[in-house]
Length: 65
Image 1 (cartoon, one colour):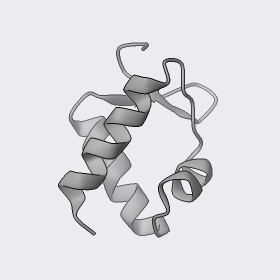
Image 2 (tube, helix red, strand yellow; image 1 turned 90 degrees about the horizontal axis):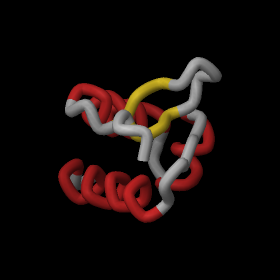
Image 3 (cartoon, rainbow, N blue to C red; image 1 turned 180 degrees about the vertical axis):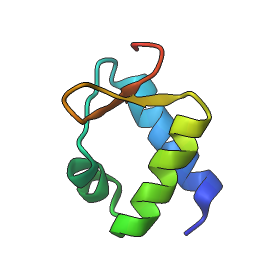
Image 4 (cartoon, rainbow, N blue to C red; image 1 turned 45 degrees about the vertical axis):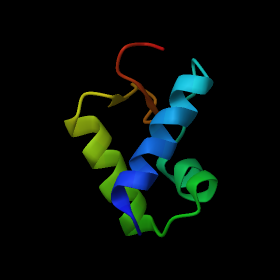
């Protein structure tokens, strides 16, 4: 997995689809990643303050986009 390429793609999807909310299981399927790789991507984007967890346990853009 080219982590930087996946991070760019995921950022792009969240930018192109304002209001996108995904559970970890949905993200794994949408991005075509193994569960552990998906977790790595999610954690990297949360650490970068691009994504956040919602109260319902979904991922969303941290800036509300």
